[in-house]
Length: 505
Ligand SMILES: Cc1cc2nc3c(=O)[nH]c(=O)nc-3n(C[C@H](O)[C@H](O)[C@H](O)COP(=O)(O)OP(=O)(O)OC[C@H]3O[C@@H](n4cnc5c(N)ncnc54)[C@H](O)[C@@H]3O)c2cc1C
Image 1 (cartoon, rainbow, N blue to C red):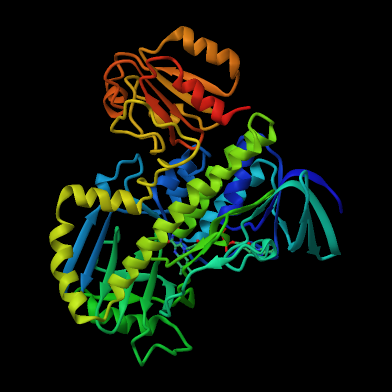
Image 2: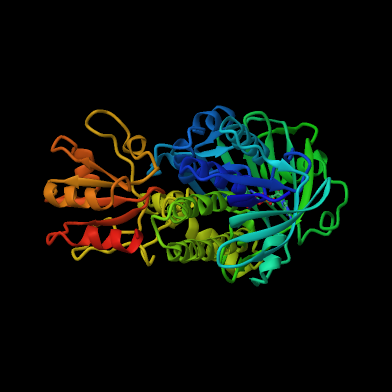
């Protein structure tokens, strides 16, 4: 088999599936292969964060996700019987102010179904083995049920998970130190008097326990590295978790038969580079860290959303391939920060050091009670605070605002009662223009035809004017991934053009 397609995606996990859907949105054809004979039936990730939900909304699948998810609206962490922090998600700056808990296999099933409707079928039993590339093309050697074959493509996406063969074949180093902590987990139905819209976390000298409710069951995860009884346990079942829960829960709980169980160690690794010429690493192939905070799958899906629009512009010859370097420049620092954050979270939660624990148990309840800190914490977990302020492709204005180039574009409701996010259809750049210079914008429209759309902000759009700090004539360029490319006054009519010159050919 020989075919020449724009993009070959290796791996049909949540990240590869998101990449295929995003490329389709921009009109770029792809093939997506996976070595497994069928989609996964068990779940790792259990939480979809608000930022990912915002992006899934523009794919048209958020309603289906929400129908099957449980909306978790608070997180309660305790040390033994001592309450550490109660976080409420209603303060999140998003139209989706909650954690959507849904087993990963169900999230994948929704994405697969979405792709099938678009005419994209995951090719199964196809294992990527190696590649060759030159300046124009990548040739991938794959192994199928009929034997060895080659697929040629303009670009290759390595979304093949933690043990990525694509990464191995690029010889890009995967660096970091794995903390030697042992976890056990089950998914099981439960009966409990605890509120089911709350994620519960507990820590003690022996265990750390996390209970994440789903619509019809629950994920229970325990860290048991220090526990002689469980650290080498072979048979993980509901009885073990009943015993662990009884150490922490004040109200009765009954755990039904475990639907599946697993044990795992945490990995903390980051690829030294995300790109080798025509090959890109995304998701767990590029970064892996503790599941604390429910970040990994979400980050990977957002990797795809970051790269897809850039790859589409290059493939359509509207931008130079140099634009693709901004994928690593923007996404790798985010992964670095998340690895650091989840490392601190897991170290704090599983600490057995008396002095640290006294300090933790004293400080966290005080700090977490302050509303601005609560807001910062929940927006952080929801991945709403990632920004690309240091990106080489965003343009900081002469006069700085409260919102910066590189920040996530916030949502507001327009005076016609529409969500701004619904207007920003994520298929091109948008310019919000408040009292802008129409002649200048017309000139830009002629030069960069079809690459952006202007939204005139009326005097009635008080919410936009306030949220985007439009005190006087202002332009805000919003990229297809809903990040701000530029925000400022552009008094001399040169800054928007400068932004576009960097981006487009
Ligand atoms: C216990 C646990 C709980 C977690 N909870 C959360 C959470 O709540 N929220 C969150 O965001 N993240 C969570 N994560 C992390 C999340 O599961 C991963 O980040 C996510 O699965 C990564 O997706 P991916 O598509 O990059 O890789 P994967 O899901 O690993 O998919 C890779 C795909 O590539 C295929 N493949 C591999 N090699 C080849 C090859 N050579 N050829 C063809 N196909 C290949 C595989 O078959 C697989 O289908 C959790 C992880 C664990 C372990």
